[in-house]
Image (cartoon, rainbow, N blue to C red; front, side, top):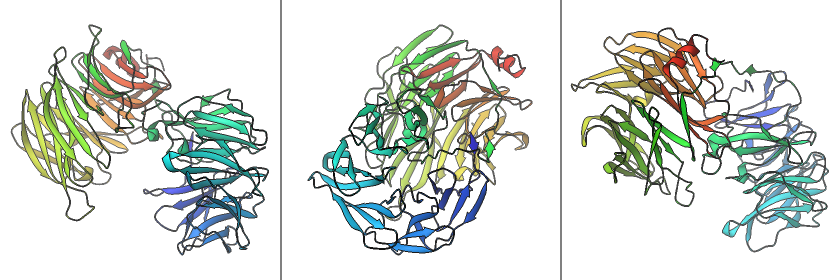
Length: 628
């Protein structure tokens, strides 16, 4: 994997590739600024836009010399990239996606139930075909076949009617290809269509109607999980959810390739999920960029491990026990399987299951002096949140509800950070209100401490505050968008640490130390003096933002994507635990005799993995005697 220097702003950019993958158009999301980037040479040059924005997933002409764009005046134009000359075209709806003909002389677009062609020289557009079916309300994404003989498009309508249609370029032979297809791509070498529906990816020869199903994987969102052909027409790239139904596609959609007959299927990405709808370009050349950095990966033997039937979504540890919540759940009507919580005693090799009845989600779990806590969530439509903190003692029936919060799009109460240490639990409840219509604002946060069954407010903050860590009666709270950390002391005092530059994304209290994580650096502070005692860069690689997990004695655990990092605080030495097929979520917690960590095994019928590692095995890994 290589990172290309595209210089994308924080609020994003639209990137469109030429058909050969040798040039990219980069358009900033918030301004009329764009440049052309050539990944083989690493060069870039600005192009004149004068108030234009993209109107197609494939804005480049087939020869890669022109772009179809829309202006802020409502016109559609063809821009010659080399000269900057523009030609207005007759497209009646400027926000309708347009597609180039193979010869680059026409642009296809849809209006309601009609398919049109507009000459690029500005002459009037003409009607190609009309889909006169009463259940159809709109046509989308017209695309021309590689030989120019056919046009395919997707129809949408009442009762979620979806269908893939094809018609001759002269308007003849309009017919339905597949009812469930929501995205598609023409073969670059013929009249074949690869298309995606909820039941997988299929291939059809449009001329003779012969078809073949290539994959049988359930697709959550076929409209954004479409196939892409290699330039030689021998392979197809497609998207596959590495945890199956119920997993959030934005974190679990991996890229796979296969031969056109459906054989030789294998992943191209792992624990680095591309965004939904991301365009993919095949490039038959070496790219100039930054190679992925090498991490100190070691294989550490697991002392003991268990599997779960559903993905693990939360982990807690105490003594020699660990508890995991499993299953993503979700909104009513879209809800995946959920629970039960599994409590595992690795020393005695025993398991206890705790049901999560009446819950739509259960993605927080804790252990506190023999009790199991979890957040029973029942989210609803329209940003509605309904969370309840429950406590259960394994082996006994029923649960105790500690607090319940409800909130909507702009107002309400929201349960925030949840932590435990020995028999004490701390959490925060944010109160949201609005001064004006359509404004969301946290105006007050109360921090609670629960000992036994008694809960009381220990501090009230103005604005947002998030409970992040609890140790020996001290509570660490993130404030001011990560610019400050307030440590609530057992006697009622507060010690505040302020930070400039990048905000704090996580903290851990461990004895006399406060360990602070920012996006690219870990810092250790002395709680009494406030002095920095150590600091190390985060070995993030190309992964997502790091997440701090836990600290105990001389060791700190943090997670980047699907990798668990263990840092030795005395000398800064670091190891990354090797789990080749791991996917998110991933967690790590320290116990008395060694760490527990959990991950999910990609494409497995029992994906959840909970692992215990003996402390001696970690020491061997740090001294180089582990298997690397």
